[in-house]
Length: 109
Length: 117
Image 1: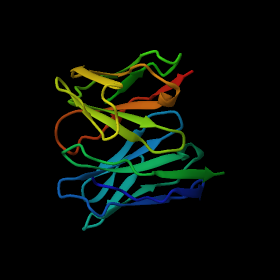
Image 2: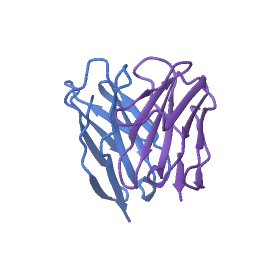
Image 3: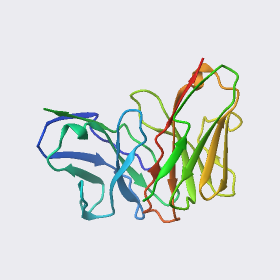
Image 4: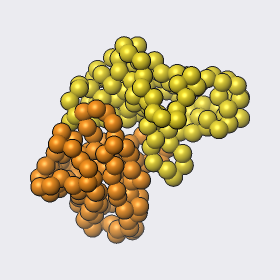
């Protein structure tokens, strides 16, 4: 199973950039890295997905180094509404994957 | 796009009752659907994976006779908790994936809060 390791929690002030790093040392060649956001009592929501280098969309950026053993989700200028749990997931073709502990982000006014 | 609808959003019932939860992909065909269970302040735990028209694959420790999964069409999967007991109370979440390639992300429903009295 492609296990992941993330910090359990992070705090940030409003307006700052937040970077959350995930380790996935045993990622396989065909695996993609996907990040999800979850609010209490809701299902996770897709944020961004990447394979290598850098991917950017309207809400976040994803940085993946050449060895792909880690990835960093970057949230620019966070607001109070970004307080949530963030999960990184390595998704191989075989549908065998593992949701790690996630990172609980608290944005402070 | 990529909307997954899950019903009901919450259910309270007596011990011994069977409860059915529906998961529908509204605007795409879901080749694979997943069922998760989540306890308070914990991560999602995969229970089973189902592909349309075939039997579900259950994770180790999940009783297939207790948690019946049916994926009869490309847009609908159901989870039935049979003879539910208080220890089955949890937050159940489904997700769906279109296509067979590894780069299709999962799209999640909003979960079902199940409380067994």
